[in-house]
Image 1 (tube, rainbow, N blue to C red):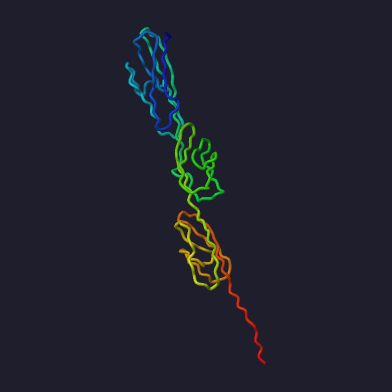
Image 2: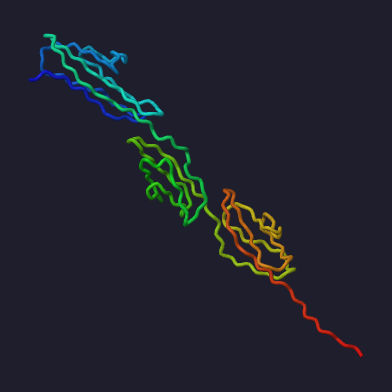
Length: 238
């Protein structure tokens, strides 16, 4: 059969991934003498050259930029005939993502653009590279670029919801607003409500009151205070 040497290894490795440098020799006249050239610099990694050849495992290190390594196997048979083969491994970086790429308040109509966006985002509530804030919760997201992946999270904090309608009369007894089932505080522009939600109807009008959760999400409701009108009639004394 024809004289040959064949070198194989995965052509792309991401940080932490490994593969074994595989060698196949055929034809020619044994015994064979093996040598390696790595990036044209000799056998700098100390790859085994004595038969039976120990497996050489290539593990991709962390890297910020892509780079490659060229492995060349050089075989010389008993007659001095030489055969060579080359395998190139590309080492790609994993995407650099923060632990939480989204930290925002729930908003049924809002989206957050996920960056980087040159690759593929996967996970719940994702359309292309846009993440919907419609649902509260913690979502696991995966981003893949150059065949290497990284994971991150999107954290959507719940926004307070109100169902109560408040109405009272001016000068009535202070009363406590019903808070959503989320830790937080109340506020308003005129100081009619304290942080615990105690509202004092000291003036007539329609007042906006705001509830702010511990996560910084806000919602507003209103309190209507009806003014008191006194009707007086003139009495003429002759």
